[in-house]
Image (cartoon, rainbow, N blue to C red):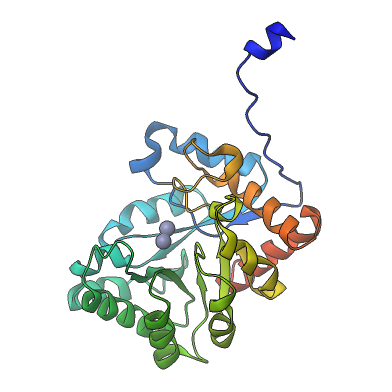
Length: 274
Ligand SMILES: [Zn+2]
Ligand SMILES: [Zn+2]
């Protein structure tokens, strides 16, 4: 007893299953993982990730994403301009984005959207950049990866007026609650849950989890941020998506082995992955 209690706590075991899963939103960039980048990616595949989708946060950072996709066929990418960076959006940037949207590695437009919590760009700049990216997603028939924080009314308004009925997409790292789901369902959008779902403080998000239609559910890490509760304090990585899937299954009264194949199928359908 004495010697055991002195040992470091065992790291939480990743509840991975052979049937596989997909991290629908991660940022496995050098900026965050440095020399460990390849190791982190290999670990994800060793934990049975079938694929991952890595969205850009800036259009001008796309080169590193194309390089990643070239090195790893199971890494799919999205190109877009994050609302924090909307201040840099202009017509020339729209053209640089448009020029790559038909490349096969690019499975979506994003991430883009509205963030009125941090307000790193002015509201008008955010609306302009988001609206333009909605138009491009419609034009090229690509799904859109939406980042929405404290901006639900504007996001629903813009997505409905410019994309309703002709645009597919996902609210990534969903931070809403049951109140937002009717509008999400009206757009027929997907809802992606991140590690926040596993935090005991996330009552509204947890209340929404059982209410999302089964064919519109996704999971993600948004790594390196938002590590799930069981590995909280550690840098997040794609392999940890299993912890969020495990929590989502519990909240929906399912076994993980029942839910995981559904999540894979949904992610493939949204992003048209092979
Ligand atoms: Zn985001
Ligand atoms: Zn992100």
